[in-house]
Image (cartoon, rainbow, N blue to C red; front, side, top):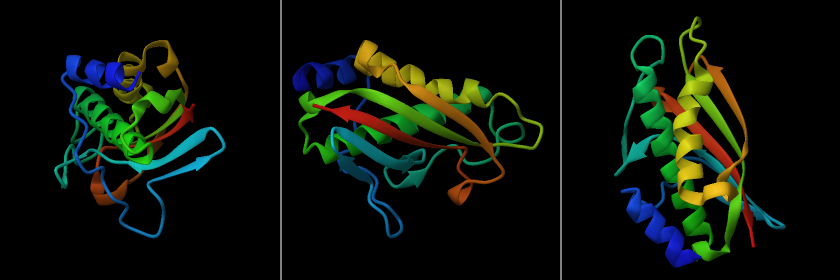
Length: 156
């Protein structure tokens, strides 16, 4: 399945970052417990540069918020790939995504924003990518990025 999953990523035009983003503090990017892999929050960073900075409802459109969530999901998958030492055939599926949206007080479309991540994970993993989820609004996020995403994955 590893090759087919990487082929699927290619078909979708997704290149996993060569080096998954490293944590900026004293925590692990991913930790396996039994057959579950918990992946720490990922922000929309590409090549070391924050993308989609600002608040939904003021600075960032819903469409750009969805693109930010999608980029966070790509970074989550890069962390999974790194934790599995490049052997994505060991990935059984996605169990849960937790999405955090940097939003104004009156913004209420958090689920629409996090759909960008959910849709990507299902597009990549198919039915095994269907997951439970939370979409939460926040008053701020690190470096004022628009979205942060965490995930739990099942490992074979």
